[in-house]
Image (cartoon, rainbow, N blue to C red; front, side, top):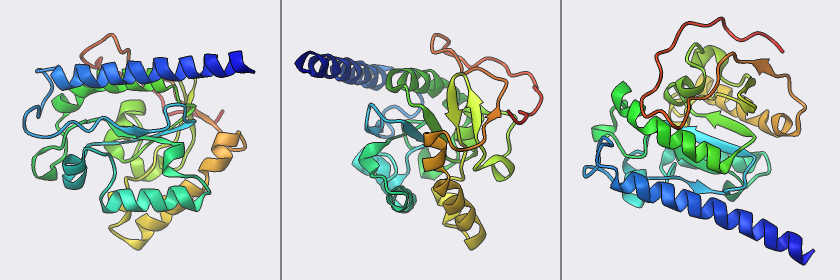
Length: 226
């Protein structure tokens, strides 16, 4: 038993060190957009999580506190996590963009492209079983042919992981219909994690962490039921 605990502790330390090294590398990377204009918001949560939530970019409150999803959208996310019997500390939360775009504007494609390799490495280190992209910008990283309003809440199998795109919490706050969609999709997560949900195949591998620029995409058929 003591040996198993020591091995588990060693694996955790290895993950922690890798993430810390990755964060330090990002902080010193002068090629990343918005460096010097906004704080680095790397991510937080359980490094041994089964579920990883990925949004698009930090907002005002996230930039100020250097934590992801702590504004109104973050409060809704926390509420929904608690509503299915989980805790925020059970999951890992981050964004594709690790710095806030000026005036909360949408991130530019070239900005996302610069941050993508770091997100890929972050995913590889944490190695979650289920990834939940929040909003269309995060969804596009995994499923470029998908449509957020059509495909949110559906389950895809992609490169050995399950990907469940959902509306961004900020979008859910804009109206009752969007809020209902968001909450209903969220309720599916426990069954998805336990393997009791239908899976759809996505014919695309995740981007390679060794490539600094995202590859040009070719149009592929929409995923079919598995």
